[in-house]
Length: 227
Image (cartoon, rainbow, N blue to C red; front, side):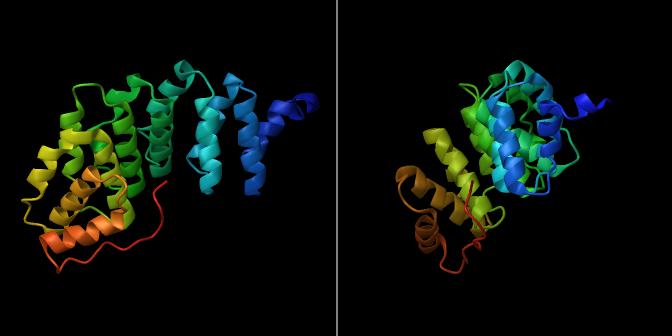
């Protein structure tokens, strides 16, 4: 590689994606999304799988949404099969933002039930964004099968995904409310309350659900807000 090529603007941008300073990486991702060049897609995807900063990851996703779906979607679908959990979760997050229905068949049951909570949360959001008309009831049942999973933030993500589907979730919630697991029953009831009153806070809904279902169940611990 000659010196001119090494110092070209494109090369400097690509190198900047791996800079030590997060603000530099953020600015580089912004620049790549602002000045679209198809040759950057693979570099953006590679960075998504290792980027430690939440805000930089969100900028990487924004940059990818600026590129034609014909270029990005096939590459993102490959990332869904990665052994790296962050690569899967970021690909799902990006697909949910792109909103291309061709990605729907790739939102598999294994992703919706992924053992990694971040992957599963991203899969729930992507599934709700991409589900075709007529398949909402099946998705609702699939999502409802995970009621009671994880801490407060995981449960909030699942509730938001279910509520976004609307009234079709009611039969699945009714089934969950007959579960032998009190945590499942509380989560199902809290989700129903959120469906009826979207402005109700999740914690308040959980408190009310506990009183309705069983006063002995403890709320899941809170760690961070849902993105």
